[in-house]
Image (cartoon, rainbow, N blue to C red):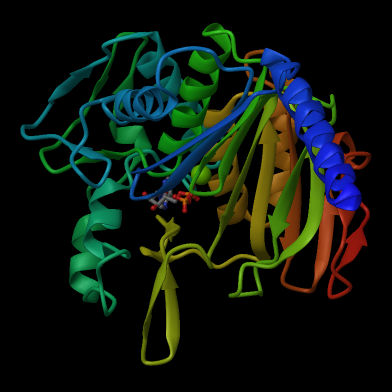
Length: 348
Ligand code: ADP
Ligand code: MG
């Protein structure tokens, strides 16, 4: 009986201590999570110190707002219905995105091309089971070419009916920026927005530590990581041929297309991860770097970083050889965890 009393007393004490601890939890420590399907992928958010309206509803509204930019079709494309059709920008965000996408199309000589829509729609990689006919590829390619659209601060003007804009290479990066901006303005102290692997980070975790982000091992279909990045207040975006693809007669056909050939891009890279405080730019650059291959990708990053118009961008390039190039701005932030890879010195 005595023993039982002692035990009960101890339990009561523990319970009371737990209650006191719970009630002492600072608002900045409170963690909230939400998830939703958007951009044809699984999206989630983890936020600390958020005290606003229902997070789930708020997250869904912000995701929807991001997807409304340029009023695209369900696949994230906008097509010209007439020759000379003008797409007037509805806000600063649209104008800035188009300026950035046009500039990158030009800097990459059209390897990255904002007008790739007719070709990407033809391939329809998410739904197809075989590659298109050569003639259909040639027809689609005749409508692709960033030089044939005129881009000003106010609008984009297509030349021909059937030309189109593809938002796939930067929609999620932009969406992550939008959600993170709104949460921060709404008073959240820190958080991570994950739109299908496009990560946007802001503020800090309650213990002050940085966010740990795994960089996918592109050769591991099981989703393993090859290294870890420790970061905050930036976006981390990876492009690779392993993300979306179909297989036909034993060959994989992925969703990043080379406008010079009309076929899925082949370079010396397995993946390109870009870190940049502008999430849309990180997203565009990851696609562009993957398309260009190691040497031209590093030259592109140098061009971007030399321009005072755009935010600084750093990268992790995973080569087919198993080497990993980490640009200097990330060397202190990245640790290689897989023994299947080795670091290669970066000239940047
Ligand atoms: P994910 O969408 O898997 O995150 P990316 O950000 O690399 O991958 O974007 C791939 C998307 O970009 C494709 O699904 C397509 O919509 C678009 N795209 C494909 N090829 C090109 C290209 N050469 N230039 C610009 N956009 C492209
Ligand atoms: Mg991208």
